[in-house]
Amino acid sequence: MLLHILTGGSVKPEIDSERRKIKIAIIGAGRVGASFAEELLNNASAAYVLRCFIDIKQEKVGRSIHGVPVLMEDEATLEHLKDYEVQEIVFAIPSLSDADRKRLYDYYRGVGYKVKVYDYPMFQPEIGKRRMREFDIEELLFRKPVVLEDEKTSAYYRDKIILITGGGGSIGSELCRQQEHTGCQD
Image (tube, rainbow, N blue to C red; front, side, top):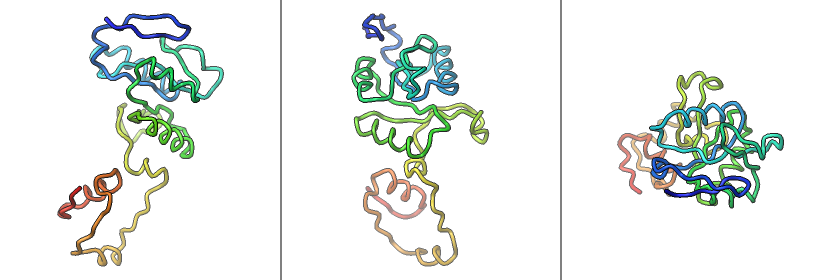
């Protein structure tokens, strides 16, 4: 049995079944984050275990939701995330501005965390169900995609071989994936 530290210095035993689960922190202690937390807590077979929330609203920080602590989004949080053995960060704030999303994404990716998104159909009805997923390539651009699908552009590139530098990266690999017969290699 492992131990992990809770806010205030208290220690809680880690359940053996949690040891194999991916430990996550949820950015957003609002309605969507709390709903996601409840889903995880009520699903013993979930692949994830929630260790903490991260939020910017002072009135939420220092409290707990469903017994899970809410941490302030600042430099000190990195130490707490290590204490909680967090492996992945999950965005659960559908209304987050593009600038804040980019800043937080860059920050957490920059310190080594895998970053995901929790989709919640209340705010995105076209999704149809709740799910956690990787960021889409368009979201990583943090702007609306530019669509250049006119006949003139298509005619220019048709039947040509194109070198994509960085084809193993997120944007280059997506360009390669979109082409059926490009022969694109990393």
